[in-house]
Image (cartoon, rainbow, N blue to C red; front, side):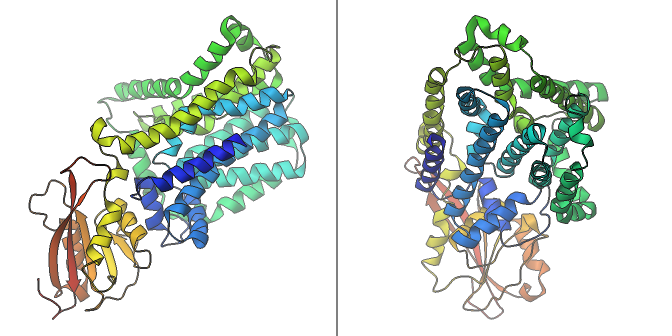
Length: 491
């Protein structure tokens, strides 16, 4: 109940903050104009769910905030269910859920500019629950849930795949669990996973380059010269990511257990041994990826599906060591309560106190103000809006959801539109450091590429808007151009 209230508060906080969009939020608004089996470097699950939400709310900030926090809440729910399958003591079940708050990627980073990673967290938690349900019961429904979670996880983020592979191999390596993977009901899981993943899988075969180039580019960022140097850099980055993702959780548990930490870590059960094998298989898989691809940068959030199980693993060890009384809900509750207060406070402060901090966030940018300003001097909405960045395009669509919005940054995504003297096209861009605010080359090329706009009349201009919570005099400038059919108003 406490966590449910917390996520309601997070929704209300997002609606209270400026209605400018973060990058991932803007992309969801923008891409919701198309229902497709694939959209580029990220799988489509979150896009599809967001479109389903928008069917009820329209392309609004409400739809964005509700879906995100509902999926984050589902992550806690599935891991709470996983705890009921593995932990005997109800107090330790509660501790395992509250301990998720100590994972920065789950409690804090996920509340920032992330969407696909949120889907990854939810589907990974669903898979973890399904895995332990299958181990305990072995019934057909459990196998079906494993298949559903696996298919959805693949549609959430590609790095999810390593999680079920590691689980399969870990079960195969232990005779106590091996019967679960030789059971013929496992074909139920394979079939459901295949059906769920099939539409995007077929798209992926034809668009492998578009789906992987961006991710591989990020992984190879700042690549060191020489294969050995690149490998060492990548392994070092992996080590840093593991420590950064798990250090707070480990430190809090060690602080609560005190001198009995070693006793807890030495305790073993068949399930803890299986989880340890999963960790080892995942680590080996990540090392192989680093060596094979020349990866030099591992981001902490890429480890999310693998570290979600860490609090449950630690709680299993504590229960096995007979230290349940040491780690009670009362001792951990103040820590969890503090995190529940600190996280929204930081999210609020980074926007409201941006002038003091000295760095404006994306939510401080006046994206939600520019369209009302432009439309206030024009009798009707434009026939189409074209921006040179998807981030800007998504923000503009939030302001005028009934107008087609295109982006030169996503040139492959097009829409039919009607434009006329009464409803001209509107090109808009961020001026940034451009002194004269002239139209960027990509927008100019887009204009020239359209046969029906080559002789159009272009009426350019600039508009300056103050930052949200900005210092006096701090403003953000946009350039724009109304584009009329030939013989329209002159510039």
